[in-house]
Image (tube, rainbow, N blue to C red; front, side, top):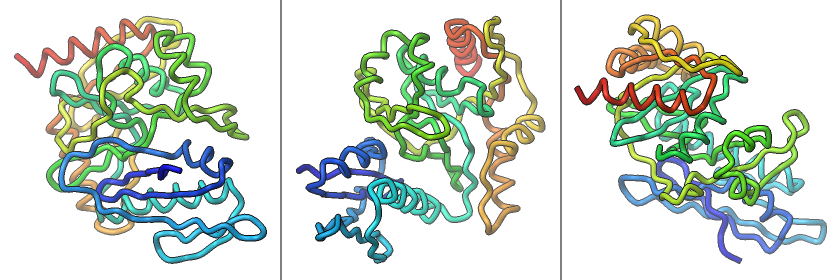
Length: 278
């Protein structure tokens, strides 16, 4: 059986198992983007069959005999921890990272603001999606955390062109959120690539369900306040991390997007694109 691959920023975790059930669960967390930069360091995660199930050796050397769900959760946790270790002291903004015509948009919004649905719509209409969960702010650039998009069935009627591909993606039944699909951004027919660059635009979503979409500029001070509300600060060097976050709001053009009609929202973002080309 081919290895199930999960990538962090600088490592490639490879898991091989003969268990079809475990492989199905791990497919949900699999992430194979092309990551710009040096070759990723390989990390093999050993899965051994036992009389009662299987034994898993985690990257830190711990050996456990987990349930199937626990195995997937522990590997997912290990890779997330690796991302934190690879960028010590870096704040992580909870937002999607998209690219169009060489310009990078960081889309930030609270739960229920429609970030995932808007991201899926933009993917279907020519935007490249690097990630939809976290963006790591490093000293000289930012990079999306490698993770597949998480899509709920309620988004599919709004993005009919990608609905079939989403339904063919790995899925789990979440006891809180219901069914969730793990969607590889390459389903739109373009490679899933992650590059370390600066942001051109910060977009803060405000839901306007059923209404029109509108875009207004935000000053750097307000951008910092809004970004800080959706940011995970490190436990160390918090003052330096806050300075990076403030710098993000100062270098990028910041916007508030009232999100109603998805096509209007897309049109507004394409107009924002032109402000950086003038």
